[in-house]
Each structure stands twice: as structure tokens, then as C-alpha cells.
Length: 307
Ligand SMILES: Cc1ncc(C[n+]2csc(CCOP(=O)(O)OP(=O)(O)O)c2C)c(N)n1
Ligand SMILES: [Mg+2]
Picture 1 (cartoon, rainbow, N blue to C red):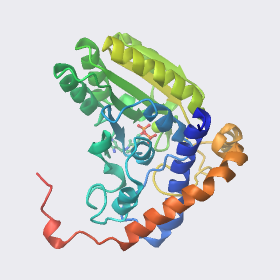
Picture 2: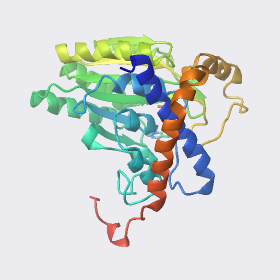
Picture 3: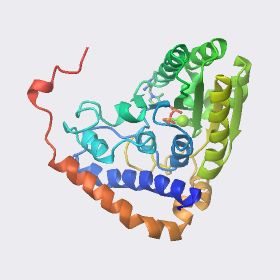
Picture 4: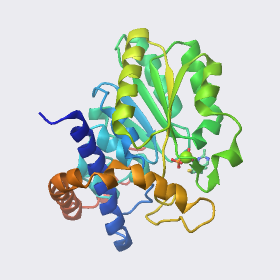
């Protein structure tokens, strides 16, 4: 049987290689959507989703590829969606920032910062009333913790005792502004003022550590029905949106980048990279092919699926 480390490594590497493929294709303009890449942050999505059942519901931000894949949604349908094709998970109308796949409990992603956090809370309220024993997960960035709806969501979930896991992926940046320029609190400590249990992980590259903490947290939430917050420090390798590197821009330093790379298993564990790359590459090539061969939506689709 494949070890847990290898399993999580494989999933993380698959996400990284998918996004590296996006970088390769992007200059061709075949991808009809802005892309917010998770390269550097994959371990968080994998460590969370490894502990969720399909029936546990997850809501993410626009930086959504990693969650879509880690939650078990289909890669062909993801590339088709990025290409704007009718075979995409949103019939080519959603794009990278609005991926969703209800069949695996990936309920949605949104371009509006913090907007899906309250959706997870609403889901959890329904789940509690219907006795479904689900955990509903909201994942979001450090910048989202500055939005009013984040605070309203934590407060509501606490007061109504809802089974929500709030996970902040703290990459220390909201576009180009660093966290110290923007707020004075520690996210996991501040969450305690809503009477929530909250935990912090510094090593956001360590999928084993994240997996183990999230496993404990999910078990506790299922047992107690009470919400919790987990903050995970991580590092965004690429620019905020798009495929470029931006370490030459003075808002951040390439020294931090070098430090993260030196502990990143997806760079350091060359043995497993060699073992898995060929298989992952073949899957990615097939998915890109699927997207290329698929049709654009017909004109008659223009006004379907809208309110
Ligand atoms: C309500 C809202 N305000 C502002 C923006 C513009 N905006 C897009 S991404 C972003 C930064 C968000 O940072 P963070 O939550 O830390 O997520 P990250 O991009 O780092 O993953 C901002 C301000 C927006 N999309 N929605
Ligand atoms: Mg951020």
C-alpha cells in the first residue's frame, strides 16, 4: 500500500504540475480566464481535503485550482473550463475564479474576497438543522480576514454552534500589500475572541503536519458540532494573478522565496518527483487534449444557467 507521505506528495505534485502546465499554455491565449496560482501553497489544500468526505462541503476563494483538484474534481473538466469550453465544470461560463463541482462537495469559489466564508456558514446551518453530520469548510486568505463578513461569519458560527472549519491560508500578502502594513492582530489569536478554538501552523509546506492537525480538528468538529479556526502560514511563489514571477518588485524579498524553496518537498524530494512525474504528465496531456478538442458553448447557451 502506498504510504501516506507518498499519497499526499503525489496529490501536491499533481496540483503543482497542473499549474505549471497552465503557465506553459497561458501565453497562447487559449485559456480564457485570469488565473491565481497556488504554486507554493498546495500542501494546505491537500492536507485539508485528505480529511474530508465527498459529503463534507468546501468553499474556497478565486485561488481555487488546488482545492478543486484536492477535493477530487475532474481534471479534464477543469482544463475545459479554463479554455471556456462547454465541457467545463461550469460549461465554460465560470473560468478559473468560479470553479465548482458539487458532486465531490467542492461547492464554489469566488472572485469577491471573503464572499464564500458566509456560504460555508449557511451550509453548516442547514447541515445542523438537517442532522447531516457534515463539516463545512471555508478557505480564504489573510486579506479576507479584514472583511466584515469574515467577522460576522465567525461570530454567527460561534453563537449558533455550527460545524464549520475556517482555514486561513496566510501567505502574508493581499495583492502587493504585506500583512504588517494592513492589520495589527494575529488571525488565529483574534479568532479566540469569538470563543472559537483556533490553531496555527507555521510550516505551510508540510502536508503531513497539516494533514495531522486537520484530521484532529475535523474529528473534534464532528464530535462537538462546534466551529474552529486554523491559520496556516504559507508562501505564494508567483505574482498575485497571472503566471509571472515578481520577486524583483520591492514589495517582497527573494530571500523569503529561497527559504521556502529550501524546505519545499515538491522541489527537494527529487526521488519522488522522478517516480511520479511521468504518470502525472500523461494525465495532464490528456486533459489539455480534452479541452482543445471540446467545443465552445453554442450561442443558445448565452442566457441559460443565469438568474
Ligand atoms: C470584496 C473585494 N475587495 C477587493 C477585491 C480586490 N482583491 C482581489 S484579491 C485581493 C487580495 C486578497 O488577499 P488574500 O485574501 O490574502 O488572498 P490571496 O490572494 O493572498 O490568496 C483583493 C484586495 C476583491 N476582489 N473583492
Ligand atoms: Mg494573502
